[in-house]
Image (cartoon, rainbow over all chains, first blue to last red; front, side):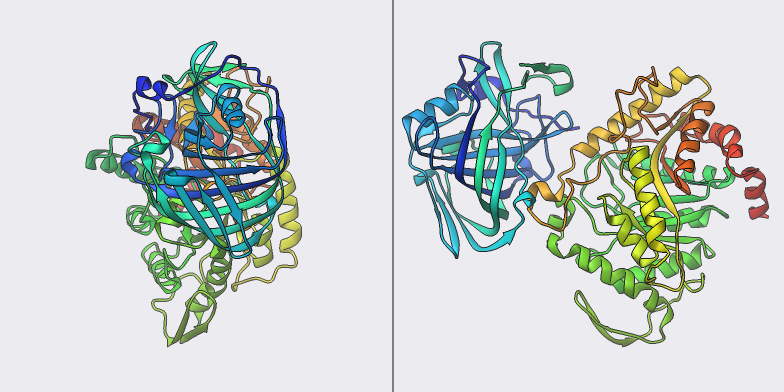
Length: 240
Length: 370
């Protein structure tokens, strides 16, 4: 069985710092959600992950974006890049990096939820013929030809993010819950991707798989589990 | 109740020609022994690109070897992935017919549509279309085996008049099955008169519900071929040992590793949102069972055939009571269990468990060889 081979020290240098493992749950109503999936090279499948996680075959690079109309942190847009993986037997997405367009959102996402996030431009534009996610020089994805799906047809994998926590360096399991009222599948085209902007040199997207766009509520419930990044989940999982 | 062994050809790392050789040769030896012991089937799956989990990409070759090395046991080509990017339907019909000839009329043909993105993406298959192409395959295969000549205009392929050769030995054609992973596929099987080849975990209660509905629906089926196959099988693990502690310790090592490798597969829905794959994929056998059941202090999940003969009989009896007509067993995973122990487990099963389900199979097997 394959496991991650990334150096923890390198990952830790870019990890967010959380003052508590008990952030206040939040719900963002009326949020536009975009998720695009790309295959990435086999050569990067282990090098992007800490030893406590296992790669999928093929590895997937997933671009996720939210356009949040209202939240305790105000209105904001967020884009995140992650890699598909497994924690024990559970499907997970390991966050490589993120960007949000307001200071308050950056502070909350990184400081409260442990999601790596820097300040930068993010725009999610939706038309009848296409959807465009533009994160400045870091990323541009365009999704074409929306095709209706059932809202439950889109799967969002639970997030795992490496963060400095009061318990030390941990993989924090963040479990966004999506309640979409509308969803469409689009064919993605990656117009721009700067690996360094997402803290990676090895997670490079190759073939586009697909993308989905939807509208609904997104909730961040209380944290339930963290795990040690250096050992398998069976050994290193801790309840919050 | 009928019994089979089921090959995934799961292979431990590092992948070398030696490890692949070991896995394949051990499987063939298990098939020969199963034939001698009175097992009914040996099944071999079709998977592609699934590192560790399954290196069984050419099951028709394996089954040709099994057919040549055995005399009685039926060979289960299952399941063939029924999407044209992987297998043209004419090639499926041809290979199946040849296997039926080589085996002397012992072929069972399973059909499937694949459920991982690893496989579908690898062949550039549109996941939205696999249910349609599977349906088309199962309807044309019996005609290809019967019509002289055969011609067709359809959704996933068309062809002018040709005689698809050779024709199978079994008339009107070999029994056909469909692998059942997602809930509801058993109804697809029933409506087409196909056998239900279970390959995913269920609880007793869930299997009972599905089996009851399957048997109800198949009574009014529109059979795709000239014969209705109304059998319902489930997939299980088998490790049988006189000492229940040894059985649990050894067997659960296999169950655990297989389950872990299964969980690491990349299911279609995780990569590709679609209505065509409603569940997240199949679970490892046993995964749906109640692992925290206080009924078994050794931690063997409900319904899993790991234990001493007494426990294994009890488990199988329960499956039988809810209408299951056959059980296919995974007998090893990634060579976790040394081959000699696997063979001993099969022998013990045949000696102590099989007689509880349908008479003297050893004698029947012997008679079959004569």
